[in-house]
Length: 269
Image (cartoon, rainbow, N blue to C red; front, side, top):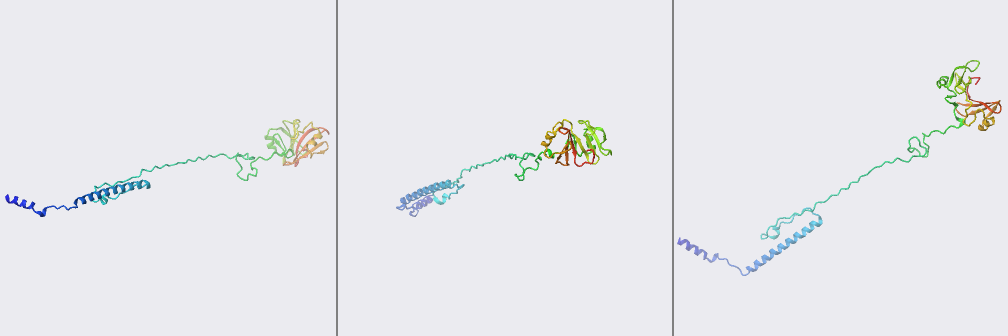
């Protein structure tokens, strides 16, 4: 035991184990501390510059260098900082378009549909009604009877009074009275041409207001194409089929007005 104590004393008293401090050791420690402060200041400035640059440029994520590489082994390790830009706000604009259909104005002259003529607007619509016929061009019609109408059709109107009587010596054409004219020869019908003559009632007037009781002069004034034939005045009409007014008179005043088919085959018509 005494030998161990002696050995330890000799070991600790050995000059080779003594730590010798150099004269500039204090200055070295001060300079090391100053370097560490400068490194910390540089790292803090770098963080500030990078943060400002990230905000200005809109960088979504910025990875900083490892502080361990900048500060050395004596600098405390700082965790890397991730900067995230604020989430962007998306504004969506919706535009709604409404389509309103307005009927076009009605063109003058188009009475069929109330819409403008899709063709040439300078032309009248083909659906326009034809202009009314002039009195001289009107068909030979009186009431429900018309010149050229077949016998069966004339009987179907109910205007004729039966039975009929022969209208000529041969008995070829037939004569009928009507509900407005009791004369048995009021209407004469040909088996081939149909009605060839119609007698107007005594109160009837033509479109130019001429009838029984009118003067012959009034007839000639109303109809410029009137011609005198004995005591009768004949006025041809420009209708199809062709026919004429026959104004029978006593020489001065009209007594009877008849309508006669121009193309007839009954001698007494």
